[in-house]
Image (cartoon, rainbow, N blue to C red; front, side):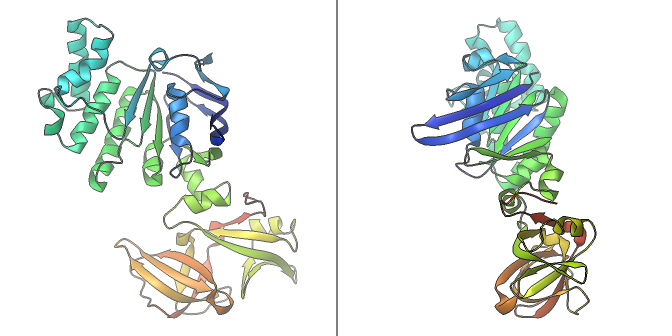
Length: 364
């Protein structure tokens, strides 16, 4: 299995920069995610690793060996795309065996290897069927089997579950994670679905407009986004981001917006002391805000806008500040009872508050 290193790689299509100065190290046997919105450059980065696109700048290494001038077949990679690309006129067996036959692998060895991966993916009873006779999930397993049959060094997946319904995507996530645990193949997984990335991947690289925004484990990515773009992209509902100014009164530090004030205590007060009078962005996750029908010291007055009951939770859209100009989203237990236009109070959990500077980067 290979360790992969991307060293300042870039890809230009004419005047358009799809990937810019990307530095990454993917560890051997790691399940690594490339996450970003449509058009962010994540698929282009994957195609560069695969050798399907030629680098404009930089170098790609597999186990410290430069591979940028090698063809996809010479890199010994396996690719799985969202459209599976199964041959409709071939049986499942022949679809899986095709890469081995192209390499003129002896028939007995080819048969043994096909049977092995078919058992691994629990499709041994489907080998005589044609792709049109299979469900979406079964077709996905066949595509995986065809990629694995060659025992690749690197497994590359581009939105492989996007054509499946929600329930099947969830079950296939479990299967992919189990498969990776069994085989330990270095895997790079491209997706725009943050839930998918966080459920599957050991680490995730978040990319936007071809530039790397943050690389972290899923928990860190969610709890401590490196900048306001990642904070707004990760999470559903996303993090609340509120423009504030810093004030000090009587030795106490406050974050103040248009008609609201929040006293900062503990670890964050020391940070604010370095930026007196400056503008700052307060970041807080919806689940780190508590709604109360009673006003309490330190709470902020708010008015309920809309309420979304989601079964396991209640998403409440509120407005705070002078004239109700600042929108806030709160994720509460489903037992909470609030109504549109109701006046309530909210309290920020201090452990959930993050501070971002003028440049959008995380301060604390």
